[in-house]
Image (tube, rainbow, N blue to C red; front, top):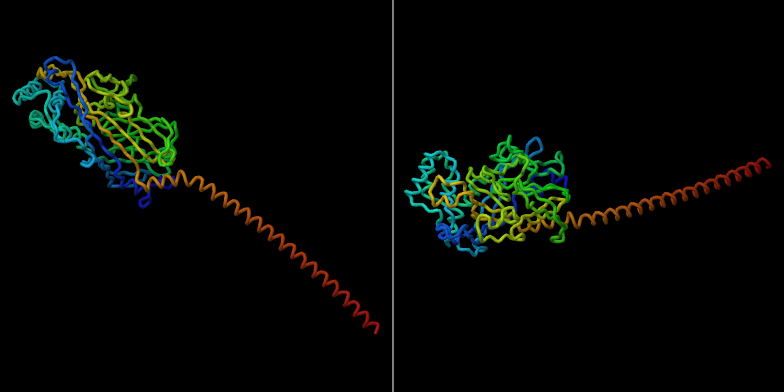
Length: 466
């Protein structure tokens, strides 16, 4: 069954389950409301204070299309992800207003922090002309999906080559370009350990946006999280690729557990995944260097100055009060993991939690009000992607394969062996019986032949005497 799964033949259950993935992934978005922006601008508070609002719940839909089987035992397809709002799961009013950093202006300032004097002068003029402030009042929907600003619009019109986007909405940026061409390994040639691992992403073996001569990380060997390799062990390291994070994410074995009567393995995301590397091959750092616990994601977002971390700076890579106050890191609420059946590589539950932060560079050459936020990292929102389970038919198939079939195969094998012994014994007994009968018949025939010879001799003697 596992060998057949490697081939991913259309019409067979593994292919059908993958080609039309179940709607089991929920996206929960949490936004941060700034509660003391006026005191901060007046210099009464040294740091911003934030409070979490959420979740806003969506269904993340995944579609696979344009499937092509290649001659080198790989399969190329197009994966498209998009969210669907679930009103029945939401208690947050999307029209409620919150105070947030002016991501549009701060983002473009930080993006062009090292621009020449002429560009900075033009941006200062735009800020003055439109009377823009470092903090703005936005609805939750605008913060997530439609964060625009006249300065950003005008900058894009004046210099479209320098300003790549005019919408700084958090989810708008994430899902603006979420249609990707993937090539994965299939077939017995690669074996169980490399099954469905990514070989190419958008036709390239390296991470998107990274210079392969500088960054040693490669996309191959990772997975998009829908299917994993088969016959996994506790020593295996799972590599998860999610463009939202713009980084390969390693997961390590944590514990054994049981769900739906199926024995499973839990793999946790490394809590050091966002720490700095000291061997000169840190692909996810910037200049100046990022703090421990932060990872540069700008290369997946048109160089917009976004950095990712665990929610609420969980794990201590960044002290929770390093940049803002009000954060409440919690391991149970903010870690990431996957629970899967190791023999078939079927994920029963998966949770990926990541926080998007705005990296603000030195803005001393810009407006003084905005310069107060220089050299900080401001949390904007965090998201949880939760695969909550499996469809019943997949769960029953895995249960049958891993729980019912092994003892059933032993029972069947034992019964077949006993039946074989019985038939063999029966045949030997029959052969012995037939042999005994044959011997008896031969003996009787032999005796009859002897008696016949005696009678013939006596008859001949009598006739001669007569």
